[in-house]
Every structure is written in structure tokens, then in C-alpha cells.
Length: 374
Ligand SMILES: [Mg+2]
Image (cartoon, rainbow, N blue to C red):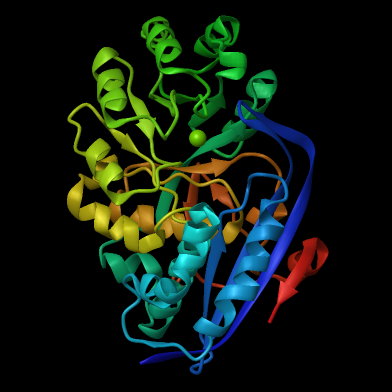
């Protein structure tokens, strides 16, 4: 039995020199919330809580974690992390339902679910990926994301210097399709590389139908979130059937049934749950039973704890896939642990440390700390 002795959380922010511009707004900093769950065996489980947006969303989630969750987690005992967080939070779930803000509830629960799994793997004395699949490979290829159209060639060159051969560029600004950008990228990206586009829900259904017809003339691996994640199931089915392009969905889906529905569509190849945003590792384990694992390409854009967790899970369930990795400078991603995150030959390499590894690098924590809670 594992018993939680303490919960520590850190709210960190790395100010960006070059803001990331998306179709839904501008991000001027990269925030991150990290939790440390320590047990009586002196193991520490790490989890990251999604908090990229809106700009003050990180402090809001951090305060909710501190004020609502802390007392329910400390002293908690468990022998299996599967959906444990759902049971623990059942008693105060209604607070979030009442507030109308289930999103923050999902985000915090996701990060804590990851921390429980990490703590469990450390108690089992196994790397997290080996806990899920003892034949897991010890690396995962990555693709570069966080690429603005105006600097796409510069960022692709930076990614190539790390051996990365797949790149995702943001499109869909002002409800438009930038043909000049597409033409230049088509020339710039070679046949043995992958190019993906991310609309970030920037088009209406009718716009998407029209633009996808044009995009069929270009060579892309997928086009991500062409329409709102809140679209009705018929719209998704209709859009998938209406185009030759591969569509990718998932980072803003908050229902197991919707993931399963999209994943079971014969034409869908890319389903992108984010384990720091909705459902944690437990959701992905469940999805791996309802949809083909080769379709699960985890979405992630945040700090190093979430990235290492995602890398472990991808290497366990879909080792041939590419994991999303922000290409922009962010020490909260690369220097969050004492062992830096390095991309070599386009891959994140996972060591033999138990769980996702550790400990945290407190030089980085101290430098970018906005608030902490013990
Ligand atoms: Mg996306």
C-alpha cells in the first residue's frame, strides 16, 4: 500500500522573447504547474497540470489545487493508481460542476493522475513505460511544434539541427488559408520529412470544407483541429468523409466516448489526447482498449514533466509514432529535472530511472518560481 505523506506544487513561468501566436490568441509566457506527491517510502511522483491558456489560467488552477485538493490527497492510501483521482475527487466534484468550470477540474485531475502513476511505477521499481509494457523501447521520435507561420523556415532549420524530421506549423489565422505559406513550405520540406498543419479550431465547418479541398493538392501528414472540438458528431463524420486529407483531433476533447467515436472512424489515423489536460494516463490506458494504439499520437505542449510522461506512454503504446515537442526555447521543458531533456537524432531518450525519473532541478524551479505550496 502506498500512502501519501505530502503534496508540493510549483507554479512556474518562463517569459517568452518571441510570443507564440495562435488562431485563438497570443501566448507571452510558458507557464507550468508541477506537482510532487511524496509517499512514506520517500518516493516522489511527478505530474504536470495543463495551464497554457488563458494567460492568468495558471495562477487560477494553482490556487484551486492548493485550496481544494490538498487536504484530500495528503494521507490518502492506494495500491492501484487506475482512476484513483476520480474516486478522491468525487466528494468535491460538485464544486466544479456548480462553477461551470469543469475544464480546470479535468486539468488538475489529469496532472495528479500522472503523478499517481509515476509514484506507483517508482514503488514497483520500474520505468513508467516498462510498467505499462515490459517491451517498451527506450526512445521516442519527436516532431517540432509551436511554429508560427512567419518564422516557419527558421524554426524548421533549428529542428533539423536536432535531427528532427517532422514539423507542425500553425495556420488558420483570420479564418483564412495562407497559400503563399503552403507553397513555400511544400518546397522547403523534403520527401523524407513530415509536415503537419494546425488550425487550432480556427475555421467554421463550411470554411474547413472549402479549404480542405484546396489542401488536397498539397502533401501533408495531417491537418489538426480544422473545426471546433465542440462540433457535433455528425459534423466530424461529415468532414472526415468529405476530404482526402488526414484530419487530427483530440487536444480539446473532454469525453472518453468522443475519443472512442473519432478513433473508431475507419478514416481517422491520428487521435491526440493530452494526458496533462484531460484524463491523464488512466484515460490513455482505457483508450488503448477501444481504439487502435497506432492511432494514438499524444498531444503535448508544456514543461518537461508532462513531456517525459508523454514520452514514456508513447514509447509503451505507440512506439512508431512521433511525440509533439515545442521547438521554442523553454528551460521549464529542457531543464526541469537534474537530467536535462535532450533531443538526439530527433528522439527523446528515456533512461532506466524508475517512473519518469527525477529529481527536480531546483536551480530552474527557483529561477522561474511564481508561487509554491506545501
Ligand atoms: Mg494543436
